[in-house]
Each structure stands twice: as C-alpha cells, then as structure tokens.
Image (cartoon, rainbow, N blue to C red):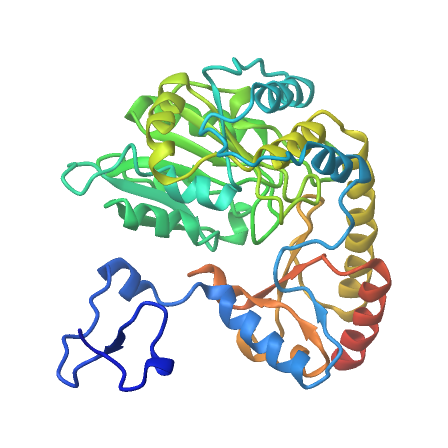
Length: 405
C-alpha cells in the first residue's frame, strides 16, 4: 500500500493521505476458514428478499427465525428505566441481578438449582456464546479436537469449531430416527465436544429426557464435553421440553436465550450455565472476546427471566399459527414433520428440489428457507418459520394453497 498527497488542499481527506493500491499488490490474505466457508447461508435469502421488496412485492417472510410479536411492555419499561445518564462498560460476568433472575427461572422451569456466582455466565446473544464456547477447550495442537453436531442444523457449531482450531464432525440426522443425533455415529477417539440442539432448529424435533440421559452417560464414559443449545426450550405446546442440566451438570453446559422465549432477538441476551469448571474457563476467555449486554439490556433481561406470564401468551400465539399451517398441509397433502415445539415447520417439498420449490413460493411472495441452507440432510425440505402475524399467515396460506392446487 502506498500513499500520495492530493494536489489541492481542499481535496485532502481528514487523515491527510489517500491510499492507492498498486496494480501488482499482493491479494489480501484471509483466514483459510473464512475463505472456505463462503457467506452465511441465510444471507442469500436476505438478499433475494430485499430485491423483491425494492420491486414493491408484498412479502410473507417465513425465512429467518425473527418473530414479530411485540416484546412485553414490562420488559421494554425495565430497559428504559435502566438507561443511565453515564454509560459505562458492562462486565464479563454481568450483574448479579441478572444471574439471580436466570437461576430463579432455571429452578422454576427445570427444577435445577444453580450457583449464580459459579455456574452461570451471560453473553450478548446465543450466537456469539455458541461461537466462542469452543475457544477455551480446543487448540489445533490437541490430539482430540473434534466437534460433533447434527446436520441439518445451526451452522455456528461448525464455524465456531473451525475458527477455534477444531475439527468439524457433522453427524447426519434422519427423519426415521426423529432427527435425534445417533450417538453411535460419534467417534469418541476424535470428539472433544458434542453439541445437541433440542427442540431442534430447523426441524422442530424434540428429544425425550431418556435421550438426554443416554447422551450424558455417553459423554461421561468418553470424557466428551456436552454442550446443549436450548434456545427453543420455551416455545412448545403440551409437555415442556427438558434441559440437559436436569440429567447432568458434569462437563455439561446449557445455552439459553431470551430471543425466542421473550421476543428479544434485537436485545442480544443469553446465558451459559452448568459445570462450574467450564464456566470458570469461559469466564477467563470472555473479557478477551466480549462482555455481557449493556446494563440497561441486562435490566430488561432480568425482568424477562423473572416473569413467565408473557411467555405463555407467546406460546399460545405460535400454537395458533402452527395449527393453521398444519391444517393446510394436511388438506394439500404436503408431508411435514409433526411437532409442537419451536416455531418451525419442516416440510418435504414435492419433487424433492427444495431450492426450486422455494423459488416457486417466492413468486407468490412467500419466503421460506431451503433445507439445504442448514447443511447436508436438509435437501428436499423447506423450513417455515412462523414469524409473520396470524393474519399474514392466513393470507400466505391462501396463496400457497392456490399454488398447490
């Protein structure tokens, strides 16, 4: 990179120099992991959606899992009342009020008593928590550095593992097994971390407590760290999904979020909980990579974890939307995975080409996520995220039904 002074003083930038890249300059080198992975899968969907919006097409967006129900006013009020006159850095450990509120919820909801000082740690959303969780426990020099996770699934498990110097060990999930990760497919000689995610994104599949007990026993036997992404544990009808912490805390972590539970996707607030030794290691890492959410967001998060009433109303809303689509899919003869958890529906597409089917729906203004966006095993499905309003869902069903006729 070389620089030159502009001829005219009025054209000079604030820094005083204009950068000029030589024609024969060495190309910018990136981390090989970043070069290999390409763009985040759902970004392509976002770009296509934006193009249609620019054309004035009315869209019914079932693509990204970002619900539009208003955040409870008590949570919003807690945030506003906590905005300080002087803003200062939050700590990595977060406020004790937030940690205690989360522990109170974990005891009410799962019957698990946690130490707010040793067994929980906040993060600015579950995505960054999941991505960074690998860093204290993996290194490229380790003999056993594999990270096993289900596919189709959330892409951040793989990406976090690779950036931490780990080895990605995807395990194919299939419908015949209820999309439960087959433990017999996990290689204990290579695996250091096993990720579970139930209720599951993108399929909505549940895992029974007996499965979590089996997974915990498997990990104990082979000295594998068990990480459980439980961001959808509070979106269900019927029996509440269990937490892995109900069956084990040894070398185990649960990742919990307010994004879906309380409609706080934009607030960025999550919690990591479990084994005190693992939490201590993450506590040493966190100041280097991030801190808790801003203090006023933590106040809102504490209010959210302390209240269950608003969550019950959100569950009823998602149940109504789910019922609407289930009735339509049955009328139209569309095959789908029955579920009463998450706000996702996993639909097998006629003809098996999920991308082509998504394009057909897009012509009607209906945005869905092709299954292949979630990795191998997702081909032939689309994910329907029940995020539009009930009225918008009804209109989308009418358009989809006309297409399916």
